[in-house]
Length: 469
Image (cartoon, rainbow, N blue to C red; front, side, top):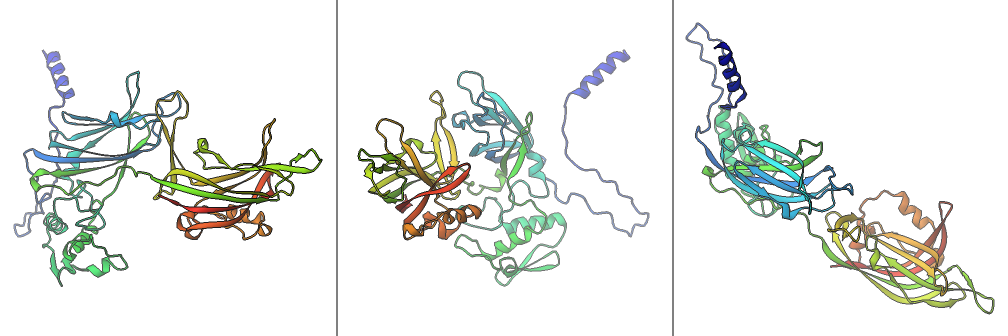
């Protein structure tokens, strides 16, 4: 009988019958009735019944996602589970990447504390076989909602009533500050001077002290709410942030953010738009005028040295769009005249200052792979041959964000023009960026490499027009 009782007790212990959250405090009580009792730990208790909430999950990106395909990459997508609800975002998988930029926002409703565990999973898309789980992370929503640090919706830096950073919380900063005062057991905040001065917890705060040297714009809300927000940010509450969470079963993190809004408090503010930036289409125009000092690589019938010169150009990542001029036949002095225009179309991300290139790595690839590369222009000078391979005579690579300043004449061209750009670190300089200029015209030096060293080969005259949308 004792054995049966022991087995039953073990079975009960292995089952989760109830989960509780709370705190236990033991206080010594004085025999003197005149001494006041210790303060209560919880001045305000949350509702004991279930709360219906709106949950917004912002999944921004993944970092070093574990490869699942033979090419060493992954085709990740997101799956969300909350209570009995599931969102499968398989149709929006990102092909051939281990650093996916998801930029996805998911919104669900739930009842807390019953549906407290939010599960965010990453899967690898497979066309012919079963999708494989990359990893998952679980967030306890009840802990966040009941936290005294306000982690259900982080405090932003500014109170905006419009624009991209519009206030999301259901309560205004002044209401949150009043609630915080009740939790701390201090008098409620008091404002003066049309909301520009606020007294809280024995201190005086001035709006001018918080917003000194800050730019004002039309999206900001009233002064009384702005100063309440500034004071809230000094109280140790959770600021607006993006958290990095490990996907368990792997060691690769993902970056996300979760907001919780009880429906009893009203409608929340509009969600953030975290969708990935869309590239803009640009057109780069290059006019090839002349070349000079080109190596005479051939011998004519009469025994004179000559070259059949032409110029080739393209942008890295767009090698299939290589363009070339017509041929300047039988140049006897190394000069070539063209007046030929190249037109290159490309997709560009202004905020990242990178070009976006999408193409299939192999002809059997199902999806295109995205590459982000700096905007560059490569110009090469060649000698045309009828019955053999063309001879390479020199080239120059131009970074459109750190453009080599051209010389006014070919005599002023030298290799120091290239060395100055190579020595300087790659930093955005408005004066050297082609995107900030209208046109650039002049002479540039072209070089060849011999024994790992660059040697001056010839010169080219071009006009480069600012990329236009």
